[in-house]
Length: 248
Ligand code: PEP
Image (cartoon, rainbow, N blue to C red; front, side, top):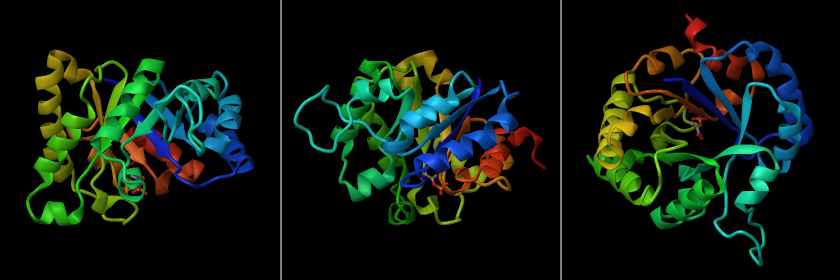
């Protein structure tokens, strides 16, 4: 299975900074053929990023989507607009969207459905908070988020990201054992839903991934890539994550 390494820039980088990042990273990753390399800039930089990426081996993702096709939805961005800007994927269900913008499983599911219908790949995020982990609810939360969020969603072009909220932006990474345990659990839910196709769904780990810990996380059987925030903002650091097989 081809690994998948995605940069989630969140609310960072202007158009000029996006161009600079791509100018710097393209030469260092251009020979990579065994990893899908994905960057998710903010909406304002998507089109410029799409132009800068051109026909290179980097793919573009959006950080959010709305499910309606057009109309009176001030501030929202439609699936066709993301395609128009050059996007191939979209992140849905990120914990920051769930937490700060009150997106529940129904909203996440509608967004995933609209993205798939438009032909966009879905990077579908799930994860438990520290309080949920400490009270032994991790697997209940993950099961609910996966089952409800993926209702009616096809396996094709679907990538799932396990992002424990306590590990996002905190410098506290899940151990490879903790990650593998949840990834295997997610794979099992996917098997029940999609049968054999579940073996081909990439399950990414996200949460303080760095060039120092990437190799041990990627060595886990059911970890098929990463969704990276902080360490994806610098071209040399993200290039190291993409080329993690060469890291010590
Ligand atoms: C993320 O927000 O998707 C993320 C994993 O962030 P970080 O790598 O900074 O923890």
